[in-house]
Length: 288
Image 1 (cartoon, rainbow, N blue to C red):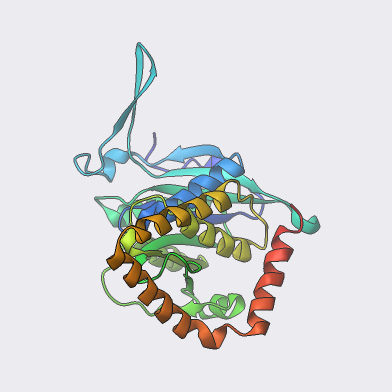
Image 2: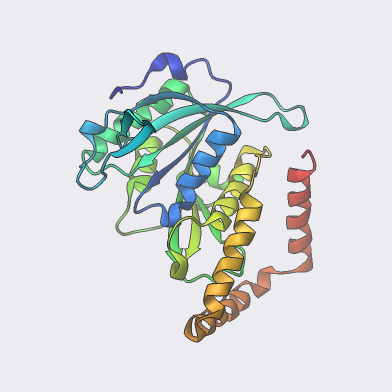
């Protein structure tokens, strides 16, 4: 492992864009990091480098794991952030393009130094945009589409992509700190947050991961392979339905959340909006 980026592994990429997510406070039900790992698998992304974990992690908080490879062979895996590179599909004759995928647990120590190392790697790749992913616990029902909010740090980017400027004030995690560091380095930064029902906070939450995937597709203007995510999302929702049906208090609470959500979204649920969303979905999936 190395604490500095490997320039050779990130140089010469094809119009790269970064997608990053980090476990911990920013990653309710592991929805965001699960998406990065899903894209790594679907694009057969190659490992480039990792940051030295000794500099950034308290191993009593983020412990290494041991895996048995054979009866007489075991491997210890240390927590740390890693960079992978995969290729985007070429939909509709679009030019080839690379994805730089960054993931790992939120660091425990030296956040500013950690961010400087990550930003250095992104600058080495000459990425055109950084997409940061997060997931938070919210008062949202599992029976409705997972809300995904998007913000940008630059007014021009926000207007171009139809996003809001970030107005959040309060405690932040590594997604917020890294986003600020990237913006200070002159990079375009977009942040997507999925809202996970707080009463089913245990990972995984494939429905939230799938919702993030859809929004990432919009930003990339490419269709990404969903793999088993749609079926996993349906199975997850059925499982939560069964859990709720066994507890009258939970069932009443979910019903209340549904009513609140439907009332809040009713003005936006016009026929034109629904038709536009359906057309967008068909365009994305027509090449599959």
